[in-house]
Amino acid sequence: MVWYSIIDTFRGEPKLPEGPTKLPQYFPVQPKGCERHSQKLFSCITSKATEKARDMEKLGYHKSFYPDVEVKPTNIKIENEEELNLPKPGDNPLDECRSLVAYYKRCCDRELKKKKNWMLTEPFRVQEEYRYIPPVKKSD
Image (cartoon, rainbow, N blue to C red; front, side):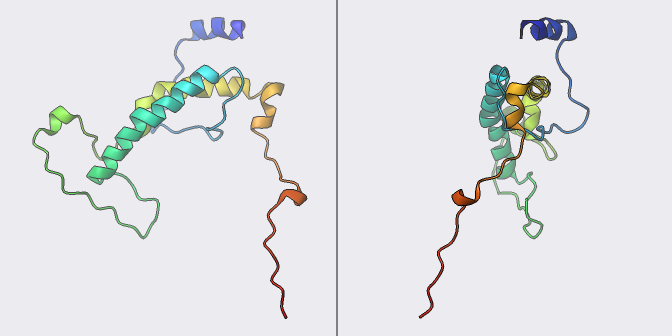
């Protein structure tokens, strides 16, 4: 743990590839050793990124998840748009947390390789006796 802190000091801030900010495939995991980076990222997503996403929804700049739904902007009268610092079309709400995503990704890429965190990436099956079986209707 200390060794990686020394290495990270010389490496500097991690960089994400150019383009839109995306969360890693393993996103909601919190491996042992990455608690600090995970909590910072989760708090940023729940506050800054969510506020920006809600503002984009209000202005009609977001994309719909469903192909048959057309997004329509709401009629909000704003006098000083520049002062309110509103999002623009095509903005990514995760850009607010870009550096935290990079730190989270670097830490998780390193820590998920360790044996103590393998279970977090492994798919698991529920045993047959614990699965939900719908009740069988009795026919008279």
